[in-house]
Image 1 (tube, rainbow, N blue to C red):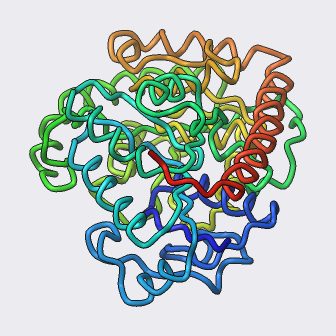
Image 2 (cartoon, rainbow, N blue to C red):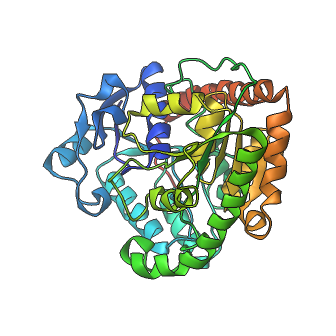
Length: 397
């Protein structure tokens, strides 16, 4: 069976890292991957760099000639990671996914949904479209119990399997998960993202950027003020170095990039050289190395914290939706989740757990245990899923 990986990922380092780990794991399991749709060689494992195909228009809805040829040569699609099964951004995204999946089915391709998240699905239209998407899928491997419970209402359980995020696979480019020595002046990473623009509109925010940016401006300014207070505490109490980390590659999707928010935060510490922005355009493997050099990560984008944990670095997640709390609960780290709404009203809601993590002598061992347990479970789940997927021939309902 020959596979292809066509999901579009532009600039989002978290989704790229998850795809990288999933693809490497498939290779390690002996899966024949004939092509990968991507934009850069360092976005995929070395063994696949001569099999890269560029994206077509409308998020690869119309693949170019090479893409169509690759799809026709394939037997199966692996749809890697992400959060496509939700309706709080726009129902159009679900409709697009359904139509793309229908085109794959018309070509005779089986679809393997790998380490995908799901939810929220709060509208009747969103749930109906999600059912249509899932009806095209041969096997869905989901990354947390919350996603599993939601999708179990929308599809047969024999086509659904629980796992963890793709970051927690042995295929991730992590050189070592050994605990790092503690002590000394800490280096703390911070990531923020634009979020308050989501509203469940029919029109995706990609196509109404100014309107959605205007909607987000006031709450994001309030969040920056709260994070300023958190950073001032970390600087005065621990003399901490602060690294502001965007989860987007520079210059790829400026409207979606975290960097503008982080620049606004840095401007509040213009004279403080211990507060810096990480701006390097590095490979995914080198990006993992950045997180290994931190003592603590405080991240709003979920993958900023999951990559940190996978690298042995404690990470507090600023949760803006249910997915973060669900995944952290599965990892046994729910006390390291702080709702963004709490931080907006009181910076101390984040300062307290940050202080607790920095004071805990067992924190590195706890982080390593959570990561290693999830990785062993995920490796086993992926191996079982591939055996099941490649051994089935029946069409999805």
